[in-house]
Image (cartoon, rainbow, N blue to C red; front, side, top):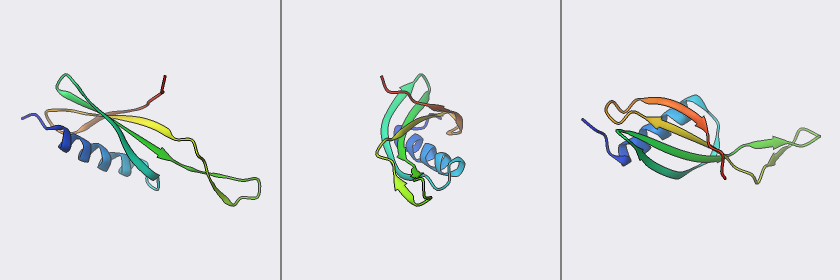
Length: 84
């Protein structure tokens, strides 16, 4: 049974939060069907530290793509997404 895009997004988000706990400002950026699988891209901001150790928000965002198996709903990969 193939899962739909909404289920793939929810599973990808849940998995992302499991393997990257504490990530701030997680945003859905892209969802793409790749054969029976789904490619779900998220962006997020991580705080950097200043020279004095106080938190500083980095305006740049990082991007990662989670691949979800379209049949089982299980995550199969997480990759860095480089914007061109």
